[in-house]
Length: 257
Image (tube, rainbow, N blue to C red; front, side):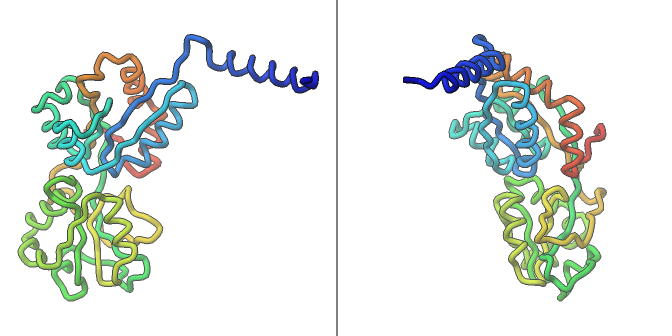
């Protein structure tokens, strides 16, 4: 026999759930293909969105190039693509993955030089990357990771690439680089986005923006999801002030390009 109090609690809880989520409401499932450097911020965005929408998110976090190539080849399926540069978003447009008129900007970032926190180096001028102070330089894979391509651009533009390329070690994505750099020798440095600095790293230098192409993020729905009302609603939400504040708090430049 069910105790009267337990029966009342069950009925009350059931009524609350029905009231909070009406019968017509359904939990949408959205898959987001995210440039690694945006993964933490977009996870916070997803949490905020779910506070007022019955939604579930799947986060695919990789370098922009690996995401774009994976979607083109059919290995990855997604509703929304966030790229860390225009080049890979243009790749998605050229291969019919997204529509050009659906692309919007999410903000920008800054390239910095960092070292393990236990390193004796307190500062490092850009030309000193070629000195004996530095034995290894970690960058992203320039062929797929925008932060790696920007690092190579800056090194080439300043005439340092040929002098330091024997020190270069590449990582597939920015999270791997940050983790690897945090446990590297004190004479190792990494070139990465400012937003991906961790507690295990110390910034030594801000890379001159004149040395590389502008760092901007771009977002677009995949063509197959363009007519999806849930996707449209989420994209509209991302363009709002609350999301802008999340990106700003994470260190992104949310000013207009």
